Amino acid sequence: MALKKGSLVKALREKLDGSVESLANDTRWSSYIFETSGEVLEFRGDYIQVKFGQVPTPPIWLHKDQLQEA
Image 1: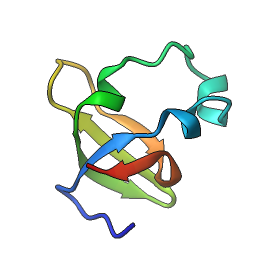
Image 2: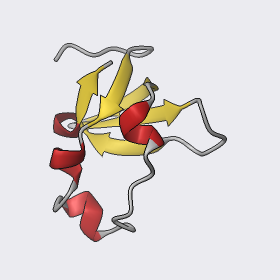
Image 3: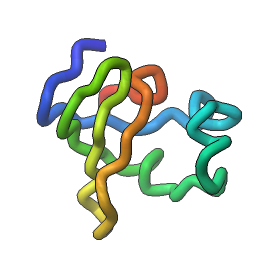
């Protein structure tokens, strides 16, 4: 996956469930991260900051393997 700033992505539920990130968060993921497109804002190593614009929430960091291009 060759993502860059501004790319649109969706989260992959099967990659989030049981992940390290799910252990540190409430595992009741909001449906909008799977059903709507988010915009890539920044990269840090294997993690990508994503802003889902459909709802007024702060950006979140997800591992690159937990995302797919929208």
